[in-house]
Image (cartoon, rainbow, N blue to C red; front, side):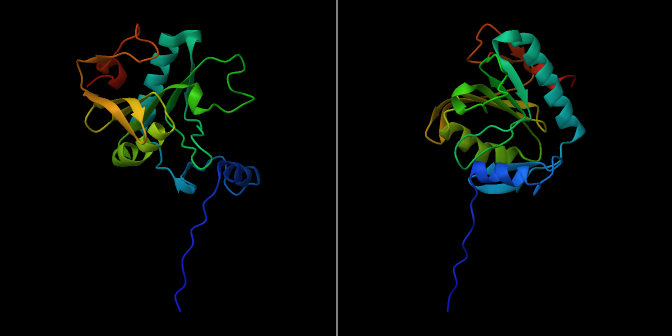
Length: 188
């Protein structure tokens, strides 16, 4: 007799109810990806510094024209809610206190990656594209490279490029704002 193994997938609502009931604590670093609860890697000092640097640059550059939302959940579907390092959202007077942001509110997602680079590029990026997130930046801490993805089509982005130190990038939503890789990456 053969028994099939059945995997239980959770919806975002079920995932939130588990958190409200104390099944996970606030210190748990988790993401819900395609109904599976995944434990995230601990944040290293270099990773934390890069997120803080980008957060500061984005707040100064965008001012009140956007909400800079660091390390908070972003519901992409009924089954998927990652916690990107930084999400740039359309401005809203309540700063998303009353309603969670949706993919339609997102201007840019940025991930800072070291040990998770392959996962971010192969798995998470496909979910961002499927949710029609217009632009994703993935910072590779190991190589000091910024991967820029634009034009979501299905589960892929049709436009991508890699930027190294000495180059600069402007977000699609703010073409007049330019960030140098040296500013994003800090001192070499």
